[in-house]
Length: 125
Ligand SMILES: Nc1ncnc2c1ncn2[C@@H]1O[C@H](COP(=O)(O)OP(=O)(O)OP(=O)(O)O)[C@@H](O)[C@H]1O
Image 1 (cartoon, rainbow, N blue to C red):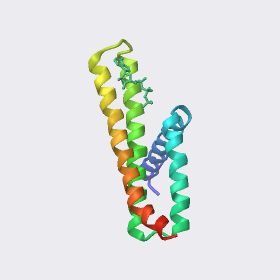
Image 2: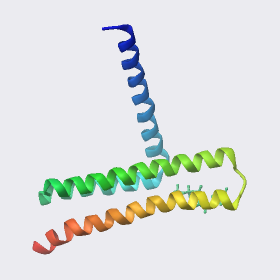
Image 3: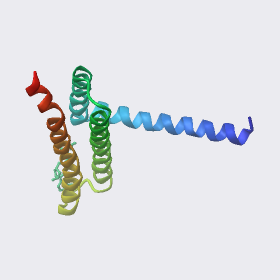
């Protein structure tokens, strides 16, 4: 194996570690992230119990990934803004509102997708 290839592999490994630390950091510090994770685990359990189709699995997994990713971007944005501009400012406030709004939009979407998939199955019981 060339040293260049080994170097690149080592860098990828380190990058993965940093990214994993980021996920751990958000998990430990953000209550909303932990709530979303608990709900996601319950939904995955329900998905196994109801035997979802491949398309239904893809829909719930995709929306979960979107919610978690936006939650992390929202947290990063809040920290960035607090670091560079700790004072109150209407522009900072509206940027934080917008990124929080993005999480809310995805969360509402996830509830709607969940209802479309699970409600008919619940009514059949
Ligand atoms: N520097 C600021 N200037 C003006 N308004 C702010 C500022 N910081 C926060 N806000 C307002 O307070 C809200 C909450 O901001 P904060 O940074 O406390 O997020 P949070 O409560 O930790 O949110 P989350 O629950 O998503 O982590 C913002 O959406 C914004 O409306």
